[in-house]
Image 1 (tube, helix red, strand yellow):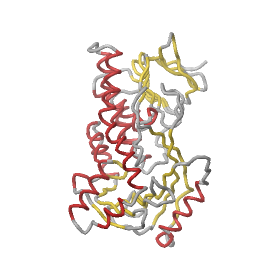
Image 2: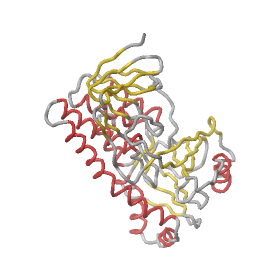
Image 3: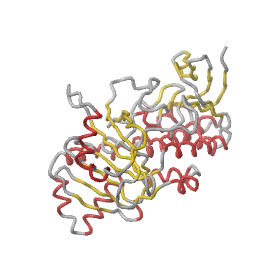
Image 4: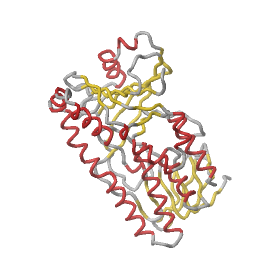
Length: 372
């Protein structure tokens, strides 16, 4: 016989989206919130761990930035390599400054903030099915029979989610990455390498502190081609980083993971259920960034549910407004990714980089990359 929890809001998944929703519900005075995750914390998570200026803004809204900032590595510039092997260093100025914060640290800080606000966290909860009654979602059940019964359920369990409203085929970006110590790099700079072998996506180097970096690639299977991820990554490393890795120390094994995205922002709710973050396919289709979008959707979902629970608005209206807010926030950027991907496959980015002796062009490229 399993344990049964009762909640006003149940949240499935304690990544940045789910924990942001939990924190903001607490900030808004919603007391009876249960948050579950298949892991206990702190736990490792395969991710480049970059936080854009919009992500930093979300962390400030959640009241955790003062804890995250000392654990983060500031990024003030970008080394950009084009498909034609041109190289340029650019900056968008202080307004475009970003950080890298390892997900083991970041996610745990946000989770602890949620718990401090009264959220009940249940770790090691492997969800197997939703509780449904008359077409309405009323919680979920774990593998060992534990149940969470809730007035409202937030789905925040990421790319692999089986509990979303949208059950159609998923568009996926594949990623593989590793960690190294003692790799030379320009301080406070990330690197984005747009090589034709991974086009229209890219490889990256993100420093996590003065001595450790993560390096990876994201790419897409094309047609029936089955590219071996490890072979592709090794070719990329051999071409772009062999010399710099010659005296480095690899930390652990390479890790791979899928990234789910969509150009359309839809099917984010059903009766009793609201979907946030990567579970709702709200990951950037060109850069594969998802942390910022996850936290922002969590915040917006919390506001919708707070309004419903306080009887300020009906469920149907609040859920529709939530989806509309997500669309306003991401639609332009996501659809601009279509243009960006075409630009990467053309000679335009090489031509732009050829013009970067002009300072205003450098600044423009830096700001565009930060806003993506």
